[in-house]
Image (cartoon, rainbow, N blue to C red; front, top):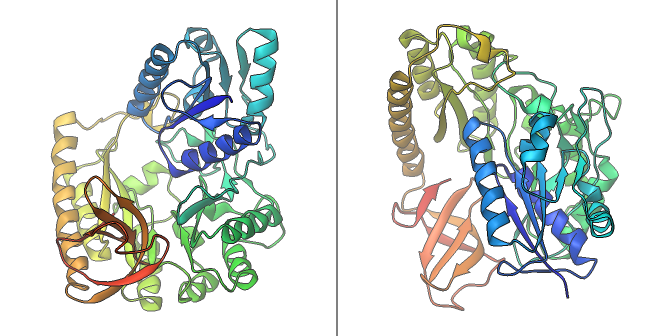
Length: 428
């Protein structure tokens, strides 16, 4: 029997795609093996320059670790580099972000031709969604369902529209089919994911939005235990979405990308909102679900960001009452508009601002957890760590539970009430 090993770098979309790739190979007789695989697939990331370095590092590492395996490198890193660089990548097959569904066919072609294969679409034109689904049960409770790929936002600091290509929506009937299969395989939580899910439907249907998709899923699957949204943009929040958010089956956690609380910086970033409109949406969410857990991303040290601009962001984050802030220092990405801007912020200042915002995040995390301290909260048990005798699970509002117990104390994929404390629960 043939064996395959898969490594996912970066976002949850890559993890979803790797699960789907594994399913393609498993249908053709492959089993998972991390010691001596015949095929090794690395799904790369390129969201930052650090991500690029990690991708190169892992390609070289797995080439040396598995010298006899067919090494297949896919995803954002190989999508974004120049054509001339492909020859320097020590692998057998290179696949960009629009050919992943063809991976097994390309593997079979390589076995026959015995020559390096490169399939990377370099275009800014509209292309079709590359249908690649994850339908099997691999003993988990949570399943990611990819509904969309690509991005048309063109934020000035970001390469994603160039390496993930134009935004393209997945046919909703295929989404429904995948969800139905997952529910039939006992998954209890469905996570809708994509590169820019806020743009879902705009390229495929007339007057059909992400909110319409969410409504249709809830109506089609009344027995769905929980549906979670991986990340959202301010533009997604309309009246229908706010109404659906009240449904008990919709997870009470939203990751809402902010990036900056300074209107000056937001404009330089080419974000399509200002702090006033963003706060208006935040306020409406709190009105709908007062105890919702809202987390966010912030970039500090964007070119031209002054101390005053940073403090606008700091104070705005505090005003929004986020429960956790993921903070990233700005880094130049060759080919972006921002990389050409002058008045760069020094590494020392960026490091100091990251630390200050991270400290604020810790204060906000503690304030949010205090709302639930010593109260019973329902958690879906997802896994048992035998080595440490720990059960792990999550609540609707994405509090993470880690609680001691012997094997058999609790059932995986079942819900239990636990009293919240700082010892057993954290925000993720």
